[in-house]
Image (tube, rainbow, N blue to C red; front, top):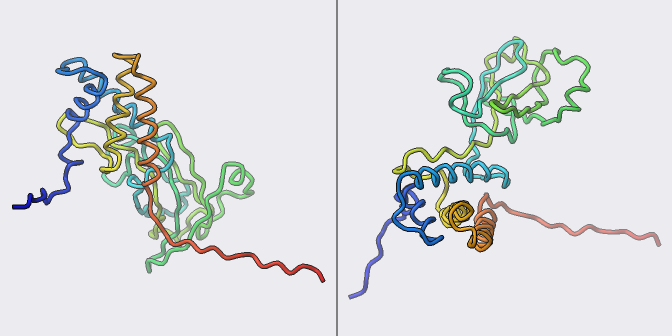
Length: 242
């Protein structure tokens, strides 16, 4: 009689924080850890997730949101942490950066906005001019991210929307029984990365080896991350002078 498969694909969600920590410690030759060692590992895992924010765009953390425009208001704020800002239920938290934005009218028709840098925004002569926004400037602070619109929405634009895609922060580890806020493809590099971090504290002789394994697995996961699209290559035609 042939063996059957499990019929499930939930390993990444049933793989809890304490199991990741146990796996990482085993890789550096430690078993039966508890107490402060568990707390140290959880702290290291949180630090590693923050370091992943420096590794480029993580597509599973891209989200979409809309902000209602207010007459005469050009600056709109999102918060990096749930402990920052206000308790306003409409506030957006965990924002790391804004990727792209558009002006959405009452008929849900979008007009793309151009993202500009600080120098370009500073060069605008009249920043209080009102009208339909055409450009936006993003500032990333310690506790918040702001979008500054140009033109400033007026009475005709008030009640319409700024629709934007933004990068969310990876959620904190939290309780040991939690699952992680990462897709299944990143489970291998998450375990090897935590082993690398812990080796620096408990087994420095293995640090270089753990680092090589971690970087290799992380690179493969980053290459697989993303959204594929069609590509078209058209050869350029040259007409030499005769």
